[in-house]
Image 1 (tube, one colour):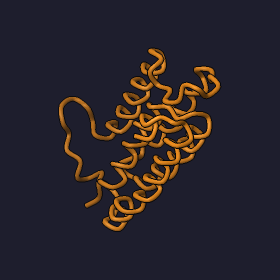
Image 2 (cartoon, helix red, strand yellow):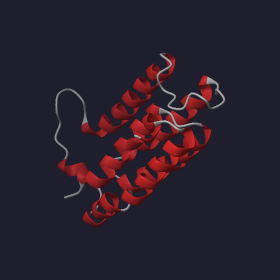
Image 3 (tube, helix red, strand yellow):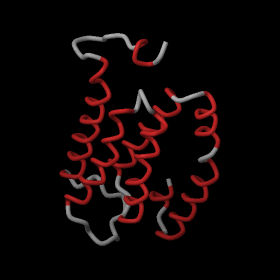
Image 4 (cartoon, rainbow, N blue to C red):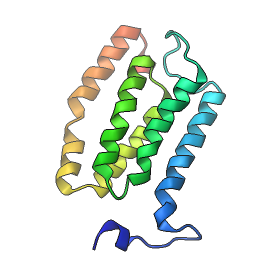
Length: 143
């Protein structure tokens, strides 16, 4: 039995549209954070127009539509805009949405994928956090 057959209808939402609604919710929440000027994590970077942030957010949210049926592909497609976001200046909504892609890839992917996602990021996360903290001189950014 595959994931599509094992989904249970909860409430009034057809499970087929669940991932689409999640993606739209992440986009709406992220757009709200940008509108409230709470989305940008690094203040000393050159300011970007709002459309740049929204395009990056949309590019991370779009793969969420296949997060249950093809979780690893969704994660790989979501990684590209996250890397661009890191170069432009890290933003909170993009990274929150990417966190969901990581979570669902571990949850709905194979056991091998889950083990890899559990162990592989440890060293880059620690090294990256220390490097960002040293580069920007702020503990907040490192955390």
